[in-house]
Length: 165
Image (cartoon, rainbow, N blue to C red):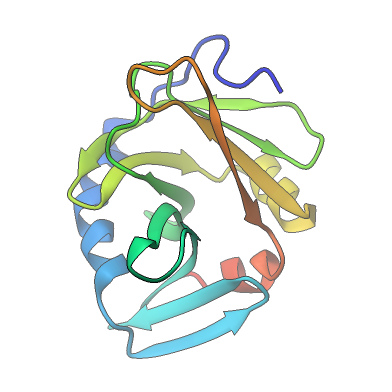
């Protein structure tokens, strides 16, 4: 994979404000939750998001390497990827669903929980995620030429994303 080569796309400033709301929403206990494959739908106060988190390590050394959530912003589904602090923001993040072409995205901001990329789920990307088996995300730690790649399962994504409101 030629991760992080080429230009990144910038996301609209309208989505930036939602990061602060969503970062708090992910951390809160839900009033209702259901699991679909590898995705969990968490709902509270009429809002529902689909969530999957990836961890490395065990016990006290366990840490989150990626939190993915699908939220709705003004009737548009948005994929929010939260990576650990310490990523190199300049090259952005790149994703790849199964063997499809890579897609490059810019980071939107960093918050207490990590650095955030907001990716609008247009019809093409949403369809690819719903029919795909996995999504790879590549990013670089700061001051590193080495790209780290994590793999997000898309098992259960179709049912989970259809519950987002």
